[in-house]
Length: 402
Image (cartoon, rainbow, N blue to C red; front, side, top):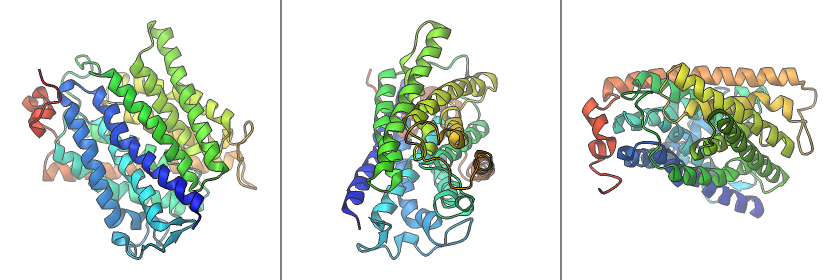
């Protein structure tokens, strides 16, 4: 065990959990109508708890125990065999399992943004629980657990594919199968608390240093470079979003500005271990532009009520960063370049295969999960419950007293 590595990953683990609780919860809660704020907070909190227990029971063993190219075995169910002396590299294995648990917590929680304000609470819990086991854990094994994509040499340092592509694609599938909110898009009210969105985004930004920097799994130069690339990408994408809104509408919005922040963070995630500072700026530039127009395409032109833009920001951002890795890894100081003997073209093909196959599996598996959930407990609240708001109709509480 290395004490420095262990100290850093202990800190990074807390930072990644901070991203969900309360970062993502506040980010999403501020974006919905005031009558639905508690429902979103409840969904984020409950999914975090369910994902934690499922990761302990079966998720970790599927993702990281010895198996084959497609799935891990069952030798570490309920974290069997992991005691105080067990190591994973230079870390206590209990810490590695906990660090990865925080990733398993935030990934299904990201999907909540696509189906807020009209879904049954039970459906959220069932869909996210099944999804963690059927989609997230196997894909984690493919990329990070020694699976078939790892063997092909895929580059996904912190989760462009594992986290953002899986969650983004699946979220859009759920939104389509659930149907749009009443009055979408013409009669949907704007975010009820932009200040809360900014606070949530800021917590996500800070937590992302544990997300990306912690993925070095060591207190070393790779973690340090990942952090500065991450920060510069977020800052650049935020400014890109600001400029686009200023040019198009005359006034940059706070919600748009911090949405650009998240787009930059999602885009740098897969590449954060491969690029230097200049690469971070370039990926922030690309992510800000691509994700901005993806929001417009998906919500306004395709008329998919991905309510809080999970596919456009996380899915498209993660995929963009993943596909651009081969081209930015060698730009400027601090980039790692590609493995010996690997060309940009070969690496790009590997990245493309990874994005395409994971997107396909996420979509197909999610369709099956949603159909099962619909048959067992149903998906959507009644029209009256949707009008009343999910805070009271689903939880018997209200977020604000009149």
